[in-house]
Image: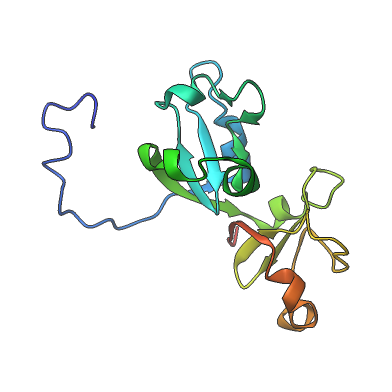
Length: 163
């Protein structure tokens, strides 16, 4: 609308949003910027369309260091010298969501990350040293209460949804 519409967003300004688009982890992976597809990245559970940003053309950023179609929370928040600043120019597409079946893959084996869900939020616990609770599962309050100090350093990745 911003690029191709003769009136831009002027005609829809003031219209309240009535829904939030949930993008599954599998859908995100397909949006890698290759073969004419959009380039999406996810940061802190939010999915951004970075297709129009010159430094994400065709999917890769900084050579092949960061690739579209992936969760890049840690890379953007902790490794990037500019952090979230450049994502201000990207379109917020929706929220990253996981079904329980998708979450079950994130156990270091099927996927190279370790994720857990607690209170409807999916966290990346891959970098937490001595993580002793299960991964790729939805945790109960008692399990988290025992490790709450360590769990507070987990990275918010997305949201757990019912199938």
